[in-house]
Length: 164
Image (cartoon, rainbow, N blue to C red; front, side):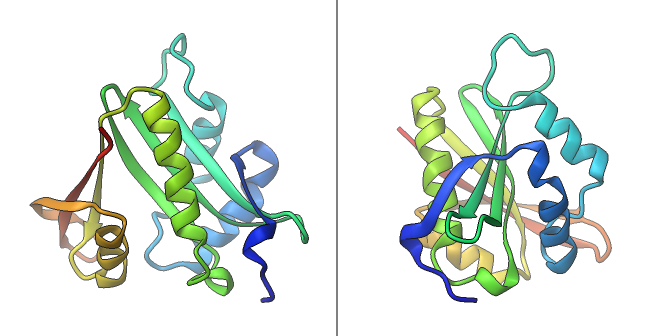
């Protein structure tokens, strides 16, 4: 895949992106395999809107402006003054091109603007690539949750990025 980082646009995820997002998730073993209904719920809540009853979320997409293709996405839920990184995924053919870093940086900017102090996440202990990625983005390991994941059962490494 030919890709120019200058052509990358980060924007809110919307319903038109759903099929591509589901395709990305399907191709990545380590991505959360959420149902279509779960993604639809995320998209119906939209960006930070304090008047919504549902848990507010930020969902962003990375789009190659040249090809108009969605290359990755990120989703975080907010319970001020904290947020949880629920998912970040980049299409396999587009990995290792800085797209994940750009998605995370855009999310962090939005979280800081919203007064969020800490961004938390859980990651499988076996997912060393993801752990190294998060460490490179200044996340710190804050604990372990035993047996957090199922199928297969595995512990989760808890990590936090302090935003303030």
